[in-house]
Image 1 (tube, one colour):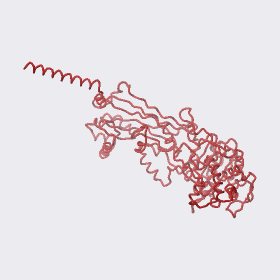
Image 2: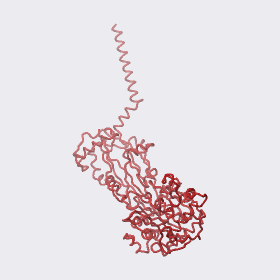
Image 3: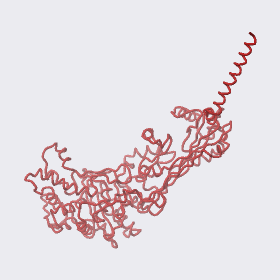
Length: 604
């Protein structure tokens, strides 16, 4: 009996030993869960943030670069014992601020005491220099280097946009999981539109720590590390000197100025006023500065060049003229008496042909021409004729790029408005309407709305005698790159190119002897332009508008200027545009008296 019990006990001991041996084998060899847990204590995973792509002007001058900044991370379990007094002394904060930082830390969803968690962000070079030699006094804390945007000029803010920390809503929409909480992302302008090209790809480094949490070096000789890849640099079509000069001219004024190279569609200058210094929306002071800038009643964040929608005014008469020629309702020699009993006009002209009507901006002429286009008499019903005529008119006007988004490489572009028969059907609630209800469209008033970018593109289209490239800021992505494919395609209007010579002749006459002759005419350059004065809400002055291109043959620049509450377009707008032409083509202005007139801002 005793022998049997002894054998049973021996068997149980052997079986128990075998079970423990098998279990140990699985723990140490097969199942790596425990090894990972051990590594999580010994390893420090550091994200290596990529360097964001740089932004240059068309001549290679640097506009946007990166400056270093530093985030302080903490592994809470490694901070014990924690010397709070020493921490406050090193970082120059109060105990109350330190307690608040820990409360915010532990309230985060991603917080775990054994994982690195962001504690203080966006420390400057100066902050880092003060603490870097004392971090070994604070076990559990380490620095993560990254970069923030810096600017070589206070110009171009509305086009550049800004970069800030990604929001929760943006993270939720990130289906590809490219971003994490705390990452920076382009929020407007070029920074937003070209985010995919600028952001680069993050890397990661694993570092080995000792029992006190002090980093001893790379883990496994860096075998599992991945390098970050920098973002692609962008070369814009912006001429920085022209941009800066135009911003000077627009200082203290509300409005916009856009310049385009007709042969490529590249935007040479894009100014919205009032604006702001892009350096305000970067670094540690971003949040406080953003509140100030966004609360400014002058709306500096509102990009008027793309988002403001105005009536086009008399510049629209050129589009009307081209459409009427294409529809065959007039010829260049058609004369119409300036009958001011029909609609008010200005100047001393009487019975002009088409070139003279454009040069003198004759309202009765274009009233009658628009009537011929809308009421061709295809039916005996003036209401049906108006529907048919407006549909044909829409087709031509849309081909100039009006009434739709052009597709510029910037966010928040507005489309303006070119009214259709359906628009008026809704407006009149299906009641009959005809030419007499919509005749104000003839002179660029009424329901017509355009954005300044469209006006500059219109000037470029005339300069090209009937086609345009979609306006775009970026001309090259990466080293020796190109613009995006959609910016390399021509868009043709529905108008025969021969008819544009009439518009060019008339626009030259506007500058040389017409409504813009005093302030837009240049001695050495043939400028072709058109003034506009857009109705405003009383008692405010009308808005001043001017479009132009230069020189007449082989044009190098096309411009649209819009100055709010400045009155006649031949004053403020024409002066600014002609100074921009001089600056771009000659490098300087030869008319200091016009420059002083603009800078003074008294447009009488």
